[in-house]
Amino acid sequence: MNTTQQTFAAGVTVLALFGFAGQAQAESLDEPSSTAAVATESAESDAPKIMIEIDPMPFGLSGHAVHVRVPISSVPGLVVSAGTYGMSFPDVFTDINSENRDEGWNAQIDKAYATFADYHFSGKVEGFFVGAQLAYQGFEVERDQSDERIDFGVVIAMARVGTLWKPFDSGFYVLPWAGVYANIRTDDKKLEIGGEKFDVAPVAGFATLHLGWQY
Image (cartoon, rainbow, N blue to C red):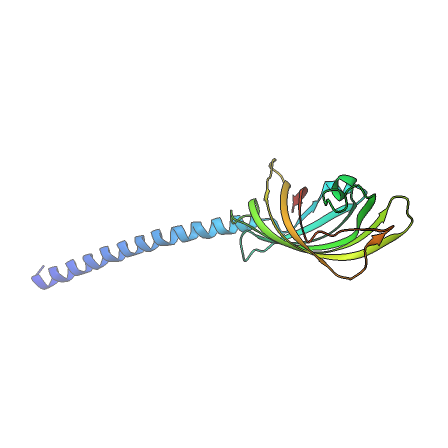
């Protein structure tokens, strides 16, 4: 083999080696991407599509509370929801407002409709979250020893925090939360019966616990 042939053979060998190395590197770079894609697809498949939850407390107070939550797949951790609820307030609830204490008021939410938006910092639909609620609440109030009733409406704007905890390896979850909200009257009715006025606090707080199931 002359010098030219030797040089040509060496060049082919070097090119072959570089080609093999480049292919191996490309495969090694593609592998994490494939793994990441599989992990993303798995996470998306594991994410709930819809969540149904109730608040047990209103059911114990001659009422109801049902909510539907929907995770937003394009924003991991974001969940929007809507619900309806109503309940009769025990005296201890009414008496929290000192302006209404010991005046014989009986109050109830006859109907309410709410929307929520919550963000879970874990990036998944679980763990700690912060959120906001906007709702309409239709109230009805009366006083002991009186047949008169007054109904009025309130819009509430609330900031809330909570956590979603799954105690079992299933779709069941527990969601305790608490919030502070502003009351905005939707009418100018005079809330007075028997010479006493029912007071609607401009700012109030609320805490409860929801039970739900992820589908």
